[in-house]
Image 1 (spheres, rainbow, N blue to C red):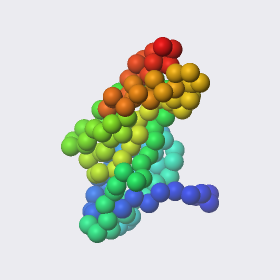
Image 2: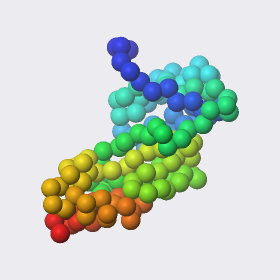
Image 3: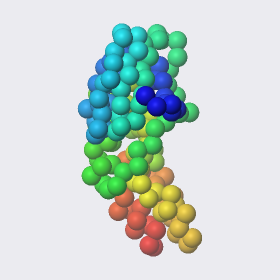
Image 4: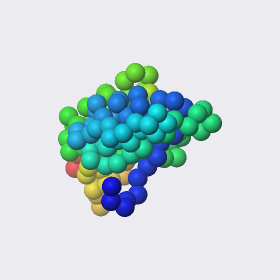
Amino acid sequence: MAKQMYPCLWFDDQARAAAEFYCSIFPDSKILSDTGMVVSFELDGKYFIGLNGGDMYHFTEAVSFVIPCADQAEIDHYWSRLTAHDGQESQCGWCKDQFGLSWQVAPAHLGELMSHPTNGQKVIQAMMKMKKIDIATLENASKA
């Protein structure tokens, strides 16, 4: 592995199950190794480690992974898969998976829509009413 920064995700004892779950959702993903305590895996070609560290630490919304989606089909895919199995929907494209890890499922061009010089506030107001992002509604707000 080339020297790079990568996340280490702390799980009670579910690192393998989490890695399998994530690999089933993201393309170009695979489990690389499993020592029992540490599971290394790739999601969409990016390196991750899952650590079976016990129940002393838990995920919070202070850290989340952003998934920039090309279209509504991608948003629907990631949203439905990540919120399945007792995941939780939140607001503005945020959700938690069954392990409590937070994700932001958003259109890749969300920043562009929100920074529209005359209608950016309308886009933000529209997004505030959503759980799962509806790209068409945000694009319409940017043209209103």
